[in-house]
Image 1 (spheres, rainbow, N blue to C red):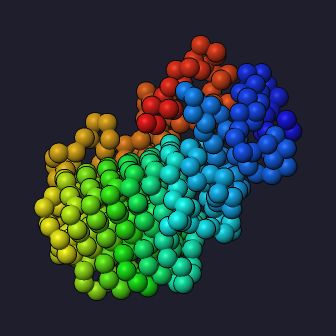
Image 2 (cartoon, rainbow, N blue to C red):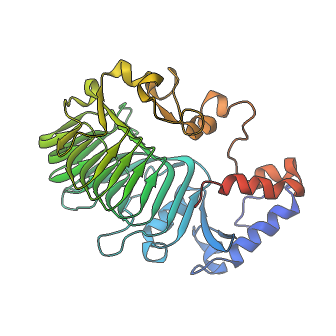
Image 3 (spheres, rainbow, N blue to C red):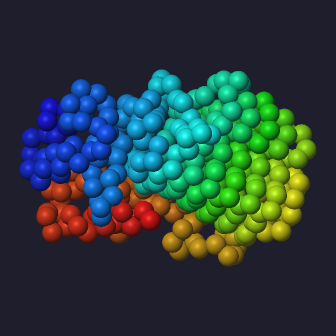
Length: 353
């Protein structure tokens, strides 16, 4: 067990949990775990979950996509990819169809710079569930590009955000040489986006949107975009082009996006244009849940609405009084004792459907 990062004084139960994780892995042998960066797995309520704690483990999954395209994956820490190369996860022929639960963590330092490839994003093409993840990236590709997902081919995205690059710019650019470029999703087809937002600056030739480039037979609910949108018609502050789709209780910032229309081509129903000061006022979002899902605070997220769990995990010194921060199981076993393990895991798993 030299591969584990156990320190003297850790509970013996922690060692047993990690050992069980290794033995329960599917498609990854014990030898793999010892000799490379394959992430460990655990079985929770009959389902296998791969737990990613390091950039090397995330890179291992990315470089061995065929073994993980239908896997359930969860982040255990914030991860900075940095020098690791990134290949958008999932392709047009082999979508990512599992559940990716970021557990409100951030993945940053993601760079793709290849104008000859399509379906570019942290994920290339997905048909599963992406939830509770915040992505900071700098992307350049051909067409169908999104800060989170290049193409959402069914499935759902919830409680997710995209933001600036690691270069120091406030809003990281998402470049597109062609069609369907969005701050969160390039093309959305028969999928849903709920309680999500993008601060990405978005550049493309046409079909460009602050949140979604092209929306087809899909839904967007309780979401917003504030990044600069640059592109030829159709271009919109929230969505570039909409076909047989719906938008509900969603917003875009006319000041920062540079757009007067929420949807470049399609129905304007369900999307509201606001100036930046109004976008930083809770009363503007009267139908949103500011007790369980959203928060707003002038010193956090540039004053724009934020996902409440992100603030509880990262803001105000790492948490809010009375709220247990999200930390790895090994770190709380000595504090909780055996009786508290079940309750702790229940809290960690409550957002996973």
